[in-house]
Length: 483
Ligand code: SAH
Image (cartoon, rainbow, N blue to C red; front, side):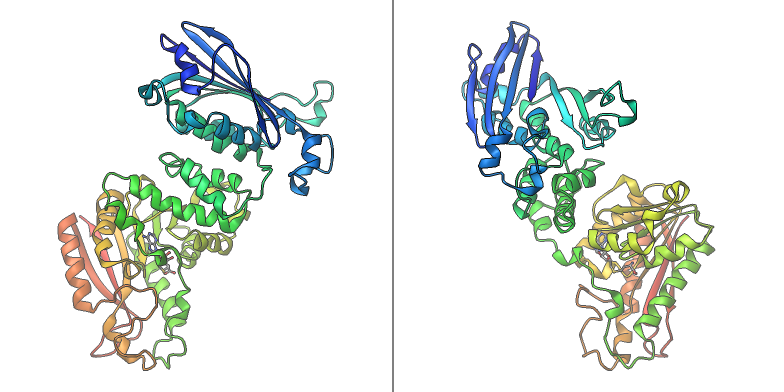
């Protein structure tokens, strides 16, 4: 199996320094899976080519550490010697360790100098996902050339080969190119020779730093890299959101992000609010009333495209989907787990093409700007703000009212005054363990008025649930309109 790196230009002969491999000889390295040889088939003043040849020994592996049914394909004969796989990643990390680490002993400045690269992977094992090669590499700035071929031209009925010769070109740092290959080759191959556990998340995030979080197909990459282990994928994606946030220019400092409440990421079902409360307004009933009230507002303002921000497990989305007024519906939540539940609740996987174009679920955080939220008529933010630390509210308001800036925002939050109506709720306690604050009607309105004035909205307040003469309704609703 071959990986070829080519660079051109007046500095081409610096390649051997960058790779820490002598240009005049073939060098061989023993690996657990066989051997790796590095040599230069071409080394001219304006063009240098380095080859990494993997000699994978499938029979040797049978006797050694890889007696793993996952890997084995049950045979002595398999594709491992002939494809770029996780072995290639191991070889890149070990044999090109300085280069992937961005170090160059003799010419340190070379490691931070972009070179024009062409990387050739003779046979990328795509497991039938060859159309993903472009989707994955192009957003990273590569010019991609792949060739899909029939498995056997004499037997077209066998279909196309899952093995795709791939050529990638880009001017960048060598460490960047090698890092992308390190992560993405095994994501395609998806047949890792080692056990995939928690530490693979660390590896993925470490190698993915600076590019994975903003990759439009980060979910696909994480899923494939972690071999579809749902809990690992979820945890990786949640950590990526935070990493992504820390790269935004408009940002709270990193320390603040690192300390950001983990609880933001896990939402316990709102129906569990005040369990057992002998309640003039039972929480479950209140939830239903709340979704109905929000829906009514969204319908009344004539919105055709709506966001459900902090959509949780998709209860409001389910109502939105049923209403044909809404032509475009997008739910977003920071909790990947909640989104998975929403997906099931909506029967998303059974959607036809038209429904898929109409409804989307996004993984993201409301306190960081996100262009995907732009251009909507209205946004619902239902029982979300009280899950954020108060010092995050300014960021949320800015994202919501200046970056997403829908024409209408329908926002709900508990009315703290009503809590004393629920006898089972000890005085001073929040309705939900994950609430960071709860507001009185006056507090909500002070905030709402200030935000509306600041961002050019007008706001009206309403109540949801049965009204107590002194303490108001259990839920308060603010409806913001951009003039
Ligand atoms: N709106 C839903 C869920 C409310 S619970 C409903 O009414 O049914 C609060 C939700 O806000 C949770 O799903 C939680 O994951 C989400 N959330 C908390 N912080 C968030 C943030 N920073 N960005 C996006 N969603 C967030």
